[in-house]
Length: 206
Image 1 (cartoon, rainbow, N blue to C red):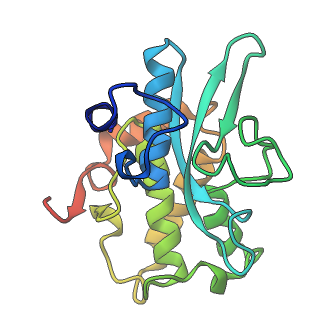
Image 2 (cartoon, rainbow, N blue to C red; image 1 turned 45 degrees about the vertical axis):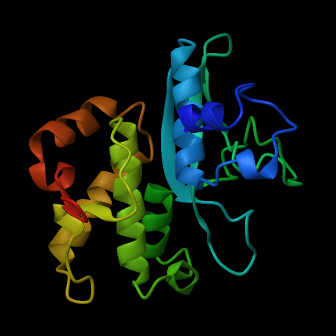
């Protein structure tokens, strides 16, 4: 992305870039680019996937954002560079915890009956399938393996209309760990190393 921006305008990051010299990218790409920039400056950063209720009011919009470690305050800060120019009732470069709904929280909210699942149906997929995809996208992102939209782990490459409760409970367990990824990172890393069906992908070009 950076190479193409410089090919089109050697000045690099400039506010007066001509429209024809811009590139169109998704929120996922923006989040990855933001994390990459932070990492090159020695700042620990990661991409996260979930739902951004502040983008639309009629449904839960899937979205990717960035988190980085703020050393002076000893905390992670959540930022949404992709929609930072929009008028929001919060600071997009230090988002309050309740602003963004991470995949694990959304999954458990639906499983426990606290969230209206009909708001999460898109592209002909059921709410549970969409939630599972997003939850595993977030898991992979935490492992520095940002998954493309066309790929899903083998574990959820299934028909969610006939999925067994045992498999749903395994996703529940993963979601519980993902709610506190820093505290549970060792367990998440163990799952990453030992559960091939959580890690290996199914989809286009795989």
